[in-house]
Image (cartoon, rainbow, N blue to C red; front, side):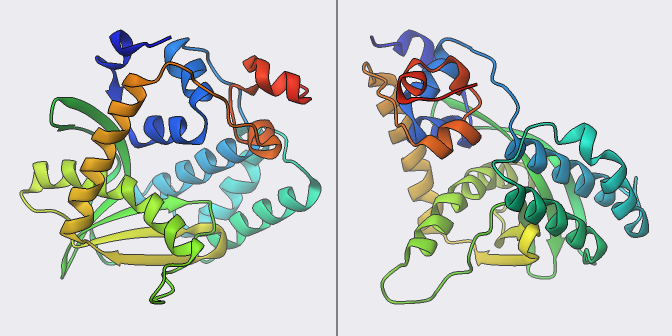
Length: 259
């Protein structure tokens, strides 16, 4: 069944669009049926690390206080169960190591966890920018990522890692619309702070990719609005440990999923 009467008036976001790309049925459950999802280890961990970095940038916590705050509050914030002990160990120890060695920047901070709203054509978008800062070369958008992205390979033929990086850069290009609206100019750099592996990936702002991202967003919304089948994309690990509505997914249960 087509639900354009709902999608036509939706407020959009990068995560909402990519939810559909990941699994149309997940989008259907979350945004058409409005089912509230459950918490998972990876989302809990990412939210907790974002909170600590925000407190540091807002000067609520000093660099010296970060490890203690992490240790004292980890258990109450990261409730979801990790897939296995090795993953838990890696994430826990990498987060602690990052906070012990967090690098201080001299850039002027313009916003932390900055709530934004912007339009592409007649579609309303919302989002939260982890950090907007100003350096000598211009405005920088930084996104804190628990995912271990790889810097661009610079090979003539893009690698799978390059394609993954470009996929995530779409989010920062969308956020660039709000930055340009507020400051009159787009950012000069888009940065991923991959904190678990203590890697910064800095990409120059490319106007052509900026326009392509706007076209991608509108094209994706059109596709979602025309959707009528809402087919699932069943991948056991992703369903079990990354999808917050898997408990309500009949397809996952038929596939052998358990609560």
